[in-house]
Image (cartoon, rainbow, N blue to C red):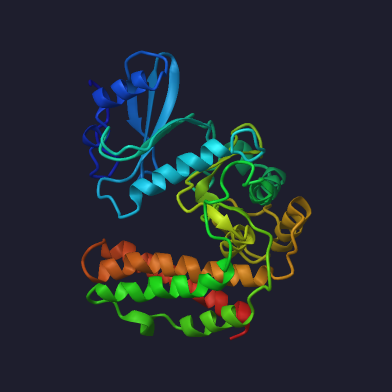
Length: 354
């Protein structure tokens, strides 16, 4: 098609091979969606892992989401899981992209995928419109909206929404340290990775988490990767438009999302943060208090969840560094993410007084 960008900016994923439009068109016809030809297909930014393709058909706009070119073992199941959760969230007060249709089968375009409605909004990690950049009060409200969003998610009656089997609630907190420890240990398969010796404090953090684990929790839905890179805000005000990227969603302790948010939240006296400009965003205790107010949950163990988030996110980021050590990922990216892991572990160590 003339004028269609076939490759992601700076990337190497040819979407015309990964999303064959003729087969997609036939599937949409069979799914009973308004008939027409696919027009103006274009990749959306942020598709370095999963692929986001926006297009129009019969006067309606769509966004297709599918796994990357090189599928991981759980890529297709992840797509099916995301689509299931987005469909279940319809009618709740959780702001999310509206699911239009899903294709669990893998033989239509080569992977499972789903279609969702586009969201009019901006990623604050990538841009800050003049309205928001010029008004600290708007940025303050944006921060409170973050707390409100995960509080709303944790309030969803997941059983009534048919999601009671989405995750294993029993032993959820007990499994956290062994799970992420095992993730770290699995990187030993990559030649050149220095191993645990290159991660100061990893043993102390894990031991502290096990020794100070909250005694119980109220189960609920978890996003699993809640931060400024996975939320869209409205361009005409401070309201959060949608939470995106639901690939880690599960059932468990919703306080995990609060810990994740706090793990990337700067100290109260910081001049800079995960978005620019930062001044005006709420203080850390304001976020905690707002979440407690809106969720009704006990936040007495909030430090534990923040330390867990540092441990978990660090374990995930270290995987790219391990692959880079083996020449399977860009060295500059691996080094950058390893530095982030070290920073997260240092933050956790300071939190536990080690």
